[in-house]
Length: 163
Length: 163
Picture (cartoon, rainbow over the protein chains, first blue to last red):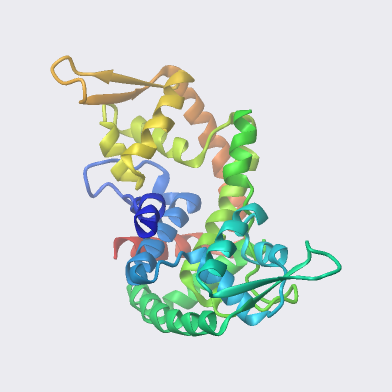
């Protein structure tokens, strides 16, 4: 059921056309960074879901585990800010990871709102496995971009986001 | 209220960090195209919302009007496929555009399911105005990417999506 729900909310959308090869005139869309970034993100997300389908992991959950892994004891609000999602949207993702035994949420006695996050040994092991799956997934997509294409893309996106 | 709802669902998420400049170690995330494409898309989407806040228009609605404008009489299912969104997700967007008088949905007498979409004169006028607003919005963001940066980015994304 969870996998089905993921399919409904995330995998269902497919990258659209980037030109008029299918007889449809896309107008200015392929010349807009906003449109093309959405298409590019959809493309990579779908592939991520496909290769990690059996793991029932969503990209933001991977990002959460990665950040908690590198910053043990980090607060949920700092995780949310670091990966760019709302605190309210983080909570159910963290709860799901906690219920799967991948992450723990500890509250300070003095302030129950000051939670700190840690990976469990199981969480650290899953994360290592996901790294091993994601690396070839990214390499395969990067092969479409030619030599140095991935580095160029990442640098352009870094400059765009930093503003 | 509609603008508030947009803010809740779309503008609320902000690009996260791309490196550890804020004291948070982002691990492998800044080296992943999937993560960075999401951050890049968030960044451009937010700016789109900001410059078009008064227009109450979402990026997919702009895409729909653009495709209908270029392909008068196109069927909703072809619009959905061309821009990469589910037919079920297209329907409320088209309905909203119709209610605003920007687009018409005509059914063939022989087959009520075979709808065709056309812009209204108002829709064509709004679309022209949005073009005039979006162009400088994209130019401003593209300035972050250096000379030829936008062309390079668009070409890389095209190759990525075409597969």
